[in-house]
Image (cartoon, rainbow, N blue to C red):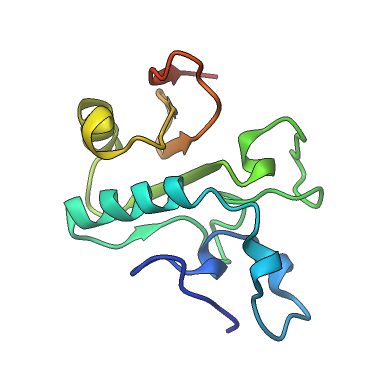
Length: 141
């Protein structure tokens, strides 16, 4: 598989749908130029805190939890996913409510790039939308 490490434990292929990798021979700087590295680094810190792998995209059951392109059947050009600024994930064996509460409780000290988190879903959604007051937005659909 074509891949490129973004952080110690997160690789490019985990952030994009598998279709994005078709016919690619390598991942270039051009492929990642819009990536919000601060958000990815915060997700890496969450992984390290829980000391367990986390799953964004696996190319199977989970394929659209990172970057979403027009090929996605629910594509929305205004979604933070469409702009490399949102990721959905889970950590096997850890309740999403525990992960979510950890992020909320530690956002100001540890996860400064996370500006929004979704509640009421069985996965973790974090994004880095602009928040002029620098507060954490907790929202539900």
